[in-house]
Amino acid sequence: MSLKVLLVEDDRELRQTLHEALKIEGYEVITSASAVDATAVIRHTMCSDQPLDLLILDLGLPDGDGSDLLRSVRAQFNLPILIISARHDDENKVSLLDAGADDYLIKPFHLGELLARMRVALRHRGTTISAAHKNYEHGALRVDLTKHAVTRAGEVVHLTPTEFKLLARLVRQAGQVVTHRQLLLDVWGAEFVEHTHYLRLYMAQLRAKLEDNPTEPRLLLTEPGVGYCLAESISTLLMRS
Ligand code: CA
Image 1 (tube, rainbow, N blue to C red):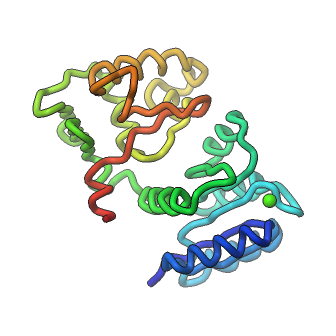
Image 2 (image 1 turned 180 degrees about the horizontal axis):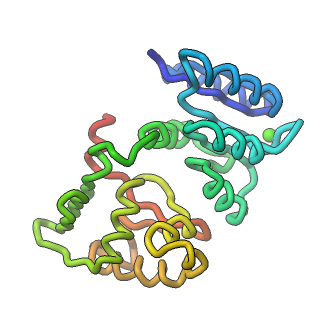
Image 3 (image 1 turned 90 degrees about the vertical axis):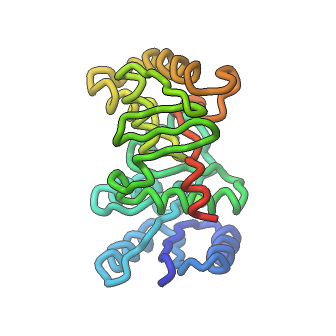
């Protein structure tokens, strides 16, 4: 059965282009051009026997803001949500990711990038227990969260408990940006969500231990003003190809 996607976009041309492209990729696509219509479609389909698998949501809609729709959908359903928007200020992006968006693409974007991010978002649905998120490998690096083991080219890498906790948090969502706030919350706790300097310090330590060239990171990537992303695991890339 093909995956069901709702595309909410008021720009007619973009909506049609994406609709065609996603259909060619094998997705079953429903489109909507307004917040009111999208709300009705979501309510209807999520209660049917073939609920939506993914929501692609534009922010600037004629009858409302996509971010309100994001919050109301997130409050009710565990559905991957990709935001597509022409707005590109970091603060907005962070608040949308914090509000439960799985990812955020700035227009104009390449179709290939949208498809890749859709696959990541779909794979991460209801994730934390799947085996793919307990093991990570990329280049010479291997992380086994169950065994608490980190190796580089077969050599054991010694991490402090906090470094390990931070790395483990990123491994669980490899390939996706995790916001500063989320990382601080999950690794240090609620009272530390403003302490972004902790993150900078610990990311530098992790890079020094894990990257071939810490000044040009290939694994622990910075999303400026937003958060960090661990490059996707080789095994998940292979699984997909
Ligand atoms: Ca729009």
